[in-house]
Image 1 (cartoon, rainbow, N blue to C red):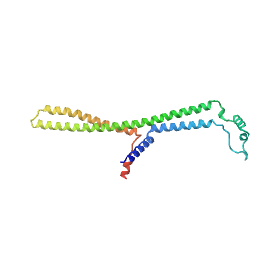
Image 2: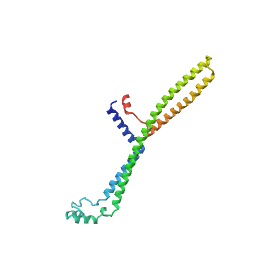
Image 3: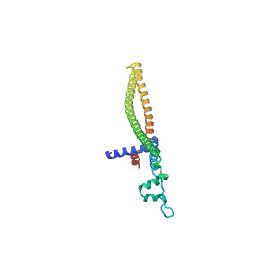
Length: 209
């Protein structure tokens, strides 16, 4: 696999993670909602003067804009323009921006936490693979030792104590191997969870087509 293909696969994996994790999707929707609130607060800060024509003529309140800026602002002030409602709307706008910034920070933290969890799960899975391989070799060697000591005992070349000693070393090693196999299954479940569910390798899927 070329470096370019590797980068493309990594980018695709990150994209799928952002699309699959429920916590990321929830944080994204909250951020979208906060952005919409900022837009609404900003829109509320402008005067509400209709721009439609009435019976083919310009509405009376718009005629003030042809008589100079002072007159225009005077008419706007007499209308329903919320721009002049003191600091209430300004405060709402600032509050909505602060909320948006907070949700943006939460979204970033959620994404970073998701990548960290996936990374930790992958590292744990790789480490357990190495541990299992080492323990499997150990069990195999101890099993051979038990077999050899048993053969020596049957041949009358060793007493049964040698067999018991070899078995006492084998059984704990087998138990540790079984525990590591269990931990591997748990790590696999954890990895699926951090990935937002089952994961499909598109490259492998294309190879089978």
